[in-house]
Length: 328
Image (cartoon, rainbow, N blue to C red; front, side, top):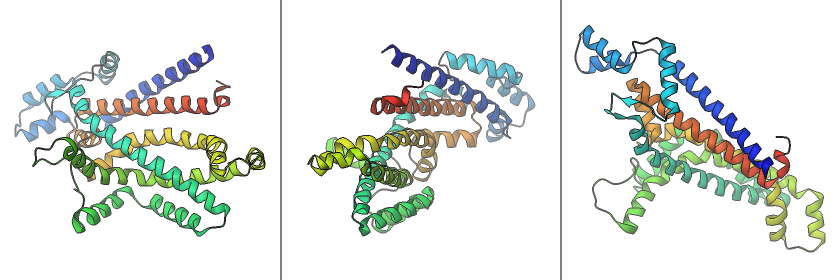
């Protein structure tokens, strides 16, 4: 047990170092980007006064040396104070807390769809390949087409097909605004708005799950312990679940952790296409408005999510195969 806590402490320490590095790098890159938030706000307000711009820069802390701004921001971040968004006239935490549930819902649904369907199709393709079936070729080729298709283009195709031509699903937003829904009707409304964005987000990862699961299952099926299980007369379903999948899922779980990190950053484009009210859309708006505190706050939340998912993946892999953590 002490070895486990030492391993967990080491991973948490490295994760904290990664988060601090992301904060520093993000801060410097944001400050080096062209554009002045004070000038932009003054221009939008129709004010052409140097004193007004100077006051805005002072209120935002932009008149201080860059090193002082960085140390001040890191000190506030250590106290979980992400600052104030002057563009939105609200604290950064409140803006992120308002949008984060929508992003987590989209990420979770996309993850479940891609992992369950991808693993299932990968197992089906592997078993079909063992019997030289055409189903393996169909699944593998379809997965490669999905992987090669840009997600934003696929999202637009889904909107054209299911929203414009067939009029089955809504194209934008998270919920209907023209009705007072409750219970099952409210759930169906949320689900109908969620389906297209989640599918668009999951298709590329689904293709990778198919190929990775197929290769891992085929490799496990060729091992001696599987042939021994067949020789003992075990049922094929039990061999698949108890012997093949337990070993084949290790690389799949490893990739799942990486996918969760990519989902946290990759949902930006999907949220913009579908006008999904998550932190990806919030990041896009903050970038276009040069809202530095909000930008850095979203970067921090995304980096924390990525690190947390990676640590969780390491722990699951260690549980599936204790040898993976023996060298730590």
